[in-house]
Image (tube, rainbow, N blue to C red; front, side, top):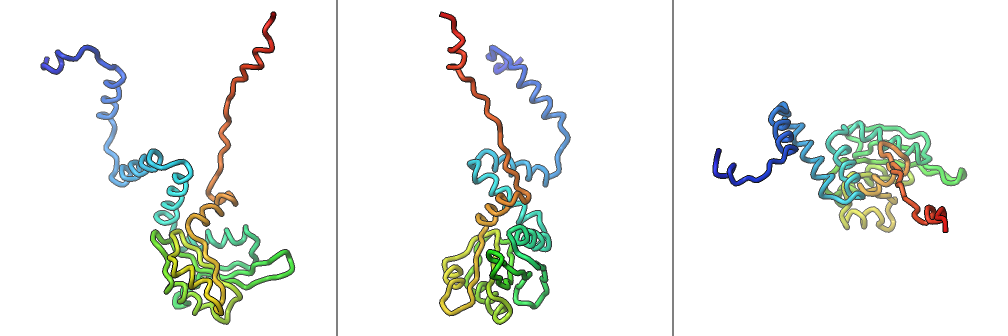
Length: 206
C-alpha cells in the first residue's frame, strides 16, 4: 500500500463503480466524442433560451443540406400563408432559390422571390445588391432568409429608397418562426408540483 493509500481514511464506493464503468466503456468514435462534448458545452454553458437556439443553428448549418434548407423555407412560407411556393434553385439565377405569392387579408397579393443562405457569419450589402439585381422586374418583393446575421450595410441596402424592397430574416427570427409554427421545435410544458400548506392548515382541528 502506498503512502497515499495509507493516508486515505474513507473509500467512496460510488466513485469506484463509476471508475470501473468508465474503464469498461468501449472507445467511442471521434465524431461521437466531439458531438458529445459539444452537447455538454451547450447544455451547461448557455442559458435555456440561448441553448435551444444554438442547438437549432447547429442542426440547420451542419446537418441540413442546402436543398433541405430550401425545402424548410418552402414549408415555413406555406405555413405562414404563402401560396404557390416553389423551390427553383437553378444555377446562374442570381441566387434566387424560390418564389411564392403572399396574400394579405385575402384581398391583396404580392409576388415574392426568396433566397436562403445557411451562414454562420453575416450577409453583406453586396449579396443583397446581387439578389435585388436578379429579382428586378420579376417580383414585387424579395425575401432573404439566413441562419446568420445581416451587416448594417446589408440592412441599409435592403431598405434603400427607390429600390425594390427586400425583407430580411436572420437566424434568431428564423428560430422564432420555427418555434411559433412547431416545425422541428417543440415547446414542452413541464408540470410543476406545488404543496399548498395553507390547504392542510384548513384541516387542523382546534
